[in-house]
Image (cartoon, rainbow, N blue to C red; front, side, top):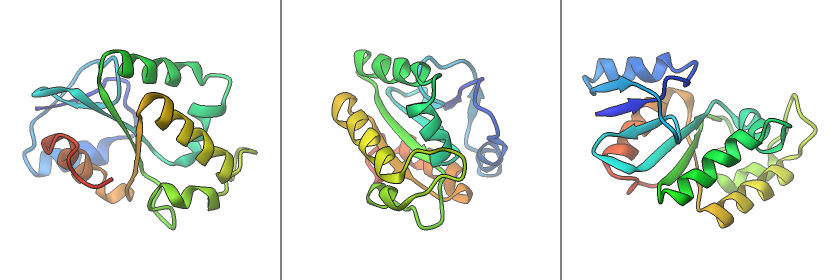
Amino acid sequence: MIICDTRERKNQHILDYFEQRRIPYTVRKLDTGDYMDTANSSLTIDRKQNLDELCGNLFSPDKSRFWREVRRAKADKIRMIVLIEQGGQIKCLKDVPKWRSRYKKVTGYQLYNEICRCHIAYGVEFWFCDRRQTGKRIAEILMKGGDCVG
């Protein structure tokens, strides 16, 4: 059964996907990430609506919350996958340097470097998907234990 964190917002498209396919889920507080499988607590998915949200998590004055979660995952030996609903021309990590924010002064190259730092220091993986595929990707990742292509 998939656990969805109570603090996860704007995720009705994901819950609709689960319901339409009769994928069992429950909503309760998670200490790390937004989605986890009850059968495998060593894998979590932290969903981001886009690179602007991730940029805010990595660069804003409130970035400490995200970094605490990343450190907690590493300390608890939980594999963390950040699933970014970017879509468009950004399909994988190598595309991030060409990204441009509409709201922040951070460049795609700066964001790419911070993502790499997070991956190297804490083992966090950054995967991308189109918003219309998020529910499917979450279910695939959790059911396969993260053994699918990012």
